[in-house]
Length: 545
Image 1 (cartoon, rainbow, N blue to C red):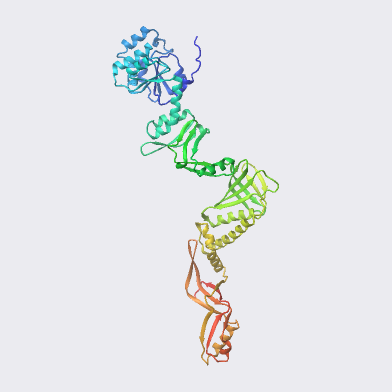
Image 2: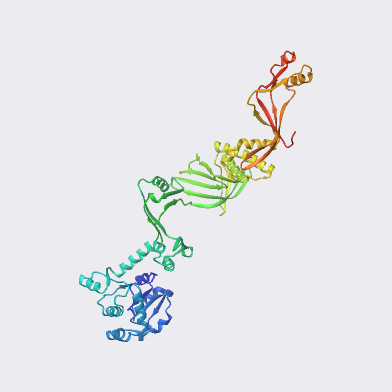
């Protein structure tokens, strides 16, 4: 009757290390293969050699296997006969020699004084002399004489228990395998298989001469246990922002440069993804409690759909951010909530406006919010709430003004059959005068203007030209309009478009003949015409007069 092993944890750990391509064991049991599954191949006899699969981890059982009683070596005479005499030309032994000659060897759980191990090692030494890879033996508390004996046999001694060295090896691989991949010290296949052991599916991309890790995700899309440990230099300005983020007074992103980082370590399921040497910068970003889309309806019936909304929460405040086309509307509510709730509302606009119609929709929403309109928000999961934020006079007036000018821009688009697209948001306020001019022109409304001087005309009067005197009298009494007609078409630049205004006509207002009495009494024959207010009306015509 065979008793179950106390533990096979370290068998499982050892076979899970893909860096180890082969295991040579003197045990008869199946503990290694039971913990390795389909990823290993057991090789017991020479008949197994032709079927070696190098894609699998090979387990050489040099003392035989319980499933093949004829292969078992029990007595010293069995052992010595096989290894000292019968194995000279044995294919099985040749494969073992090749493995030990071309691979580094780690003795675990053995004493070099063990006759079995000594026979194997002497066989290798006799055949290969010094033409072999490095060998290491792990054992606790060996005396110096034994250590010296190991050195003479070119075996490096490691003072440790097998369990401890396995744990240390795994920890070392976890800490360095990403860097080793980038330095071509480990293959992409070995890297992937090691990560898979910890339920990680790495994303790799080709570099110039190596593979580069572009990201990590969980196997079968399972979540990863990510941990970050970092220390910021005392003089860094990021410390204040980080403190505010931790305390819940700030929601957003903190960008910490490499120069500000004293140390950093990022792990996923225990595997180091980024260390201090690799980090170019560290970005810390708030995670919203809610990230969804809503539909919005105001009490006047205006409705807007699929508005992205994120909600951040902390012990001290709630912040709602709605992506309103080219703007973000932020609503901050400080806790605890009281009856006299006064949320702080702010909006920030993108630098670029994509379309006028989008801007009209944006400021229609803002205008409704800020005048205190009641609204209902509908969530995709059936959530529904009705509320109002009260009036916000300054932002409401701003929204009204923007809607006024955006409406004019829309009329201009339709009149000229053009589109204002991808223009700076600031260009609207910078173009207010031009917008007013073009809007008045397309609606046949006169523009107001001011003359540089009140002097307008000097008229020489022939004594026989009574009709001129009559005209001057009508000018003086405001019955005869005086106009100027321009010969060239006038254009105006407006938000990336050159628009044709037409032919300019100027009508001078509030005219008077300053020496009318002298002209009327014929004491003077040069009439002086000027504007009392220097005001003019400006028209544009599509036809030349």
